[in-house]
Length: 147
Image (cartoon, rainbow, N blue to C red; front, side):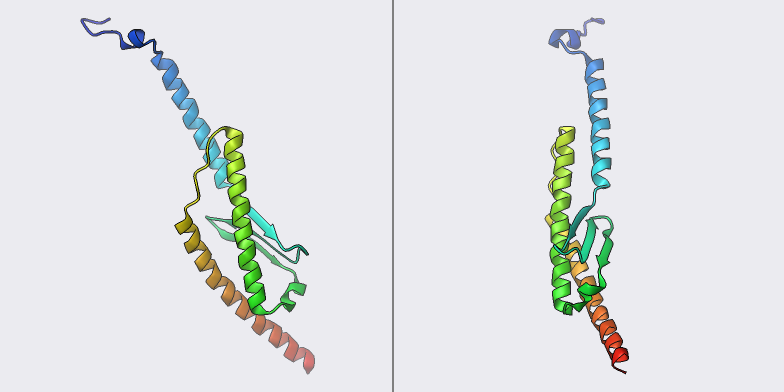
């Protein structure tokens, strides 16, 4: 005790140095988990493997593979398939985040539905334009083959 100030650590049986060290370790663990989660990418593909993609909130669709045989689909069916796969990739990403958090002994933060909705809306527009472009390209190829 120093000049009339009680030793709170001794009174409460606390070890402040140990508490500070524990807090530091928890902060490091949280940073590690956040880093691992930020690098995760959700994946999905059609049963025949002709369309496969990867999804991340930061990059949208960093990977999109469309086998030329999948181009035989109509543009609307192709767009719907890609949109469905984006949803499946998002679900895969959520599962990966939860598994990573569980491995580290922390709870994963719930995804922000509004942010996800905005991302998916924007991606839907992009996919519709891509489907229109793909249809136009198929028509050009068809016209050239018919000559």
